Length: 334
Image (cartoon, rainbow, N blue to C red):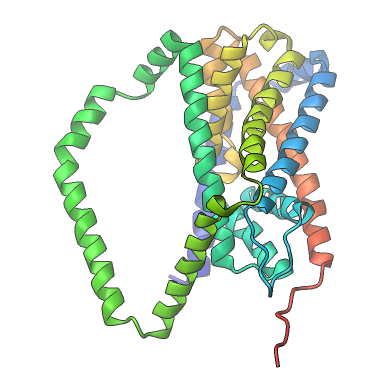
């Protein structure tokens, strides 16, 4: 099968799954209910959440720019360009799941001459740090809502069965990993002088360079402080929306934090923009907290819909602005 046809089918499949989940979740919600909820919502808080979310997007760009070292043959990465590249990435993610990370790296490769491998390396650093903060957020939510958290974990995953299965298959997993790594090593040695292998080696060297960047930052404190603020902004985005919807206004800070955890997991799912998965998980946890089912679903739709609207509008503006910048050309050295 042609790669492009395969990619189109994969995108169509993920979109189809997302839309089916969304339809299944909202099939019993009448339009009049949505209208009534929108009319009764306090839009000051909802609009404030969008402003806070936009500040988070800009801060993500600022943090990303910190990871780039200025090379002699590259343009420095400004926080403004990094921000626009991030927004282009979010926009692409609405079309092709996970493709936004490559898209934003490609933007800086085109406009600043940053090697693609190096740019992807910095994204891996960001993702590793975000994973660390997600783990910290889950742990904090556990401390605040430990009984509920344990109950939910038991409902979603049979922990005893999962542990037993992993232990039973551990030798097979370790053996398979060892064989695969040995195969790659032997293949690399045999074809180490092949042009394609050399390109892969260069790419991974650039990738490693990006990962190592965090240890050579000029402003490491700024990187870590901005990372903390980014996750605080995620929380505030959800908290302000909850204040704008009457049925969710009485949620405690710990409960909103758990809603944030569920929403983040929903956004990680390999579907366009977390469509369906975000709504299902957020609505589910809200119902557990005593919010009426219809209100919980509409809450999820409001926050996801407004955030998606911001990404589309701001992302298109960033895409147009970056396209207007002439493509970077490597300086000629005689």
